[in-house]
Length: 199
Image 1 (tube, one colour):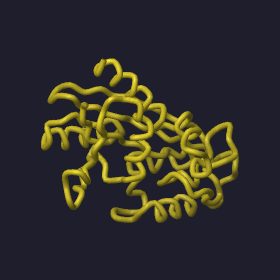
Image 2 (cartoon, rainbow, N blue to C red):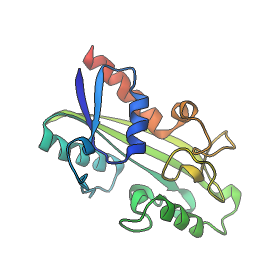
Image 3 (cartoon, helix red, strand yellow):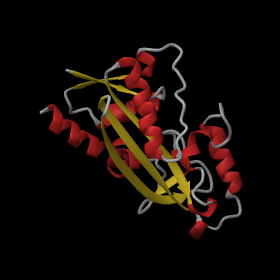
Image 4 (cartoon, rainbow, N blue to C red):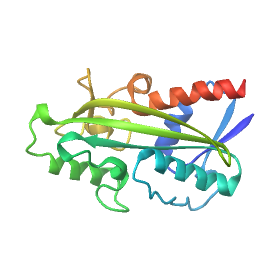
């Protein structure tokens, strides 16, 4: 069975990826299976693609195994696309999702409902050899709610209402979320690619 290391220490993200790839003959591991404490991999890129590949190559260079890395984030139109690639560090290095969500709500406190448009973006890099990698992208349009809602999901999920829905990502069930989410769309492309190369 092919092992694939997911370049993350985020248990919620790892759980989602395992759910999305559950039907493949692969064993999904993470940074926590090899490092304690989990290393903080530098993300110096200006795009999601650059960051995803940087993380994947960092792990591949140390483990020599197939690696999956994703970089994803929230782009809010009225904020000029922020937080973007800095989504995880929006409220400052070391601050968590709660602080990021609080900062976003503060910045948008006076923004009218029709101007709260945003999207989630995800880019996945799969590295199978030193110079062999595959990219997959996914996106999901939506709006920013006025307050957090829901206990599922992670990150900005309690604030993001996908287009065509009244519930936030954090209120939707996993199966429904995976069908429409940025990560779900990107990993569906990865799943098809892995199915082809694994036979």
